[in-house]
Amino acid sequence: GGGCALAGPLLSLVGVNGGGVHLVGDSSSGKSLAQLIGASVWGDPGVFAASWDMTKGGLEIEAASRNDTLLSLDEIKRADPRRVQEMAYALANGQGKGTMTREREGRAKLHWRLLTLSSGERSLSEHAAIGGNPAHAGAELRMVDVNAGTRTHRAFDELHGMTGEDFHRALTVATVKHFGHMGVAFVERLTSGDERDGLLKAFAKVRGQFAVESAQAGRVADRFAVIALAGEMAIAYGLLPWPAGTSLVDSLQLYREWLERVGNGNAEDRQILAGITSFI
Image (cartoon, rainbow, N blue to C red; front, side, top):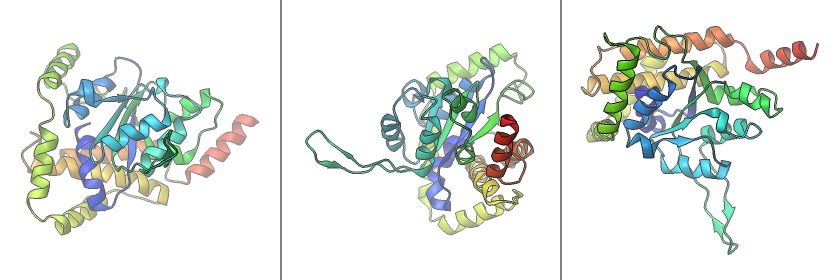
């Protein structure tokens, strides 16, 4: 959650497109808590977080208002299943449609570049299937599934000696009290020096650790690599109290889990075969 939230300001600096991470797990697995923590990096989670329950135009306005930060969207089941894949494309592409106002004046297109942290009990393609839409590989790559119910403690690996209930309560209370600090501190450090060249080198080094055999896997590797880099920078800045390397190890693990789930091959081929199989 934290790495995903902090990656927003880095995207344009390292040349990575926007996209999303979709936390999949049943209710009470800790997905919402992970989103609360992510949103608290930038503001009051109660105000800063958004919902899938809106039109595509509304989603574009929400995304543009959070440019270079994080768009947190809860409960994918609230999205219109017939439009949800299209919305995932729009969020990743970073550009809305120009519209006409009532007075027939052209309204400028909205632009944004950010990561979306989404959650739900179903994956994006499972939700789209409810509306009768076949799974679209491109949409899946733009909003990549992360299993949030299969870690040691559902969505979390480590509870720091607390029970699940106490851990959940402590962090929930903390996000209500302390929010909007880390994002600002991160950007201040990022902009205080001329780190652009160093940043590109650092990103290339991190990205080199993600094994890729197809352009499609490359798109997902880019996203996990920029999340890893953001986390490692926050550790180096003293903003995250983790040992160096923690963010990279976690991001690599999530990427490998994704690869194991989908294979490193071509996602379209896989879905054509899946379609034929279900037809037979």
